[in-house]
Image (cartoon, rainbow, N blue to C red; front, side, top):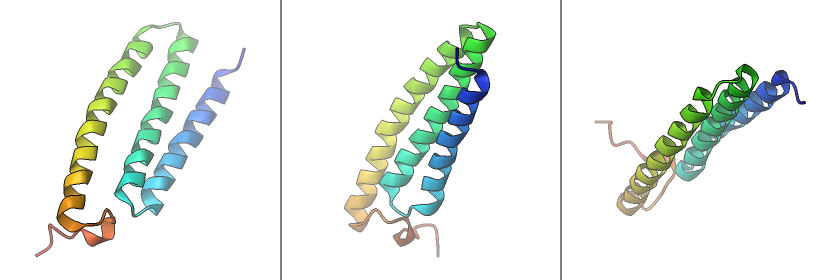
Length: 100
């Protein structure tokens, strides 16, 4: 059986890859995918803890996170599409809507 620490290390690496993608990328779609990778890293940690503690509530919480992530994906992609239609770019540096 694989120890809990291995799952947590893998979860941390997946989360770190997502954080790196958000911090380095200037493309909205890549940033959006990086946030989804971060969610998957958290889900892996939740599943690992649920399996080690023999508790079903962690699995249920992961299904809830998946449902929220699916709704977030639909809304996020709609916002990205609307931003592209208005500005003709998805580069984050080009958006200064909140500036005066």
